[in-house]
Amino acid sequence: METESKNFLAFTLDPKSGVPFYKQIILQIEMAIADGRLNCGDQLPTVRGLAVDLQINPNTVARAYSELEIRGILLSQQGSGTFISDKKIKLNEIERERILAELTRTFITKAASYGFTLNEIINYMGEFENETEKGDKENDTNDKK
Image (tube, rainbow, N blue to C red; front, side):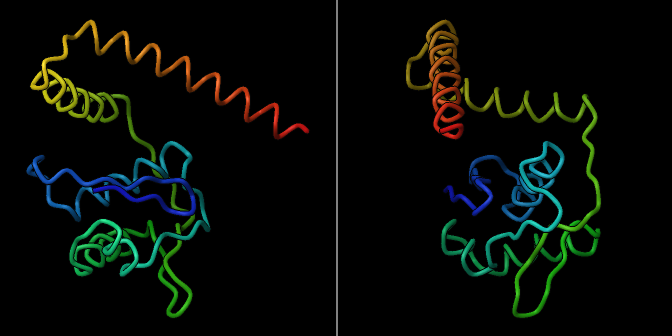
């Protein structure tokens, strides 16, 4: 399950992770704020819109938004939407490393179940990085025109 907000934040949910969907949404929003993908004043998808895109119950999205609002991370404006507040979020290196380890472990385990070796995965990741960098350079060139 995956969706992308206007701010290019791709929400994804992993039903096999054992982490409740609302917590996965909270973590993704916090990470996006911490690394600068979401900034103060950015609007999030509506509860209904995100729920439809992720094919989950709207109450799940509402719970995530509500918890973030209680913590001062989101601001809800009746009739206007849900926005990122000016509260700063910083993740320390240990937390970032823990998240990366969890994501990597899941990815490698799944890839291995399809018969891919670690070397094949590493080689593909290198190719993917090169393609991404090439695409970024092309976008920068087009932006300057």
